[in-house]
Structure formats: structure tokens, C-alpha cells
Image 1 (cartoon, rainbow, N blue to C red):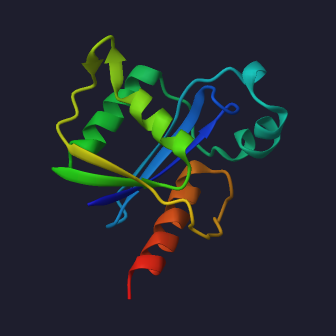
Image 2: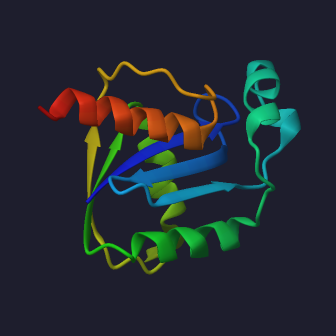
Length: 142
């Protein structure tokens, strides 16, 4: 199963704001986590925060929901168009030193950097993940 990933974050190399995964069969995961507005790049405050369209949940609840979502699948290929998305995805799988959140799924990751797409709501992680999926499938489906 292919999962298409997009994340929004406070600024380069900083904190996660939201994460979305959309499967080939349109099963969606989208959550917003607590973040420090004062740490956000002004561009993020203007262009990302107003279109989150979802209430924040605790980071622990986010990890629980992510674990439940991923454990629906035996094996996945996570596809993203930006390497920092993988940083946030991998970081969210960690629960402590040497500990992960209990994901039993085999996970492979593919960085697909040459996708061209138009999102219904640019810089909303869920809408961007849907657009990444559509672009990928168009590119690789005859």
C-alpha cells in the first residue's frame, strides 16, 4: 500500500504543526499537534496556521492515532516530495530513548522530488497529501 505524506512545520528544521497521510484507497490520517506560535516563521503564521482546519490534539494522542492508522497495513511505502516530511514522520514514531510507538507495519520511504501538483488548499497538509497522491498516480499509471 502506498501512503502519501505531507507535513507542515513552524520553520525549517523546527517543530511539527500538522501531518497527513493519504492511502491509495483514500484512507486518510490528518492531525494537528500543539506548537509554539511565537516560534513560527511569519510566513507560516500567515499561510499555514489559518488553513489548518482542525483542532490540535496532544502529541501523545497524535502518536496513538498514528500508530492505529499505520497498524491497519501490513506493509507500506510512504511517499513524500520533501525530505523534511520524513524527518517529522520518523520523529513521530519515537516514544523515548530506544523506543518506538508500537508500529508493526513494514515501512519503506520514497522521496519523489519531481512531482508537479496543485493542491486544493496549498500548505494544508491533508490537501497537499491528496495532491501529491494524484500527481504520483498520474505520473506512474498508464
